[in-house]
Length: 175
Image (cartoon, rainbow, N blue to C red; front, side):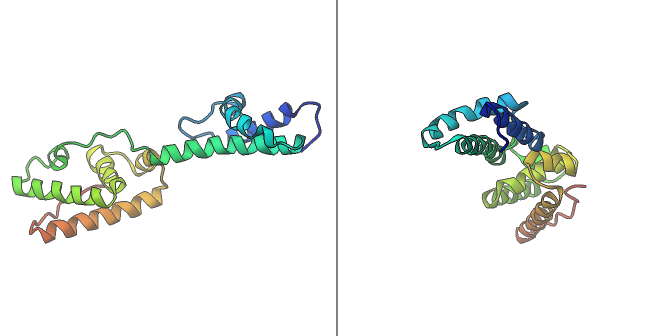
């Protein structure tokens, strides 16, 4: 840490670097002061532990990183704002399917949701809402590669479940 008369200069420089690094984060701080303001409460709790200037700077940095990590965890754990329809099959362009096939597809999707809700969200975002791979990945906070791998698993799992129920559903689930 460079020596300055005030620790604020160094804290703001560090905050600026962190804001630039995490610029695209949803609900993230918009500028250095915003990040410092959000971290102030965490810093106040740790302030009595500060032994000297350098330690106080380290505590500020830890508080700012903690704020960013909290935002990241919140973004990952928050389910996307995509409504779960009553009947996924009926709302997914499969109106021409017979009732048994729609019910089997809904049942399979419910089973997949019990295994992993995110996989169902990928199916909904890609197939029902027709988002691109990039849009789906961004919406869920995943990489495009991870999204595609989870999609492949989901489609294979759904096809297996439908075959197990005696439903010959060979229609492509997405693009």
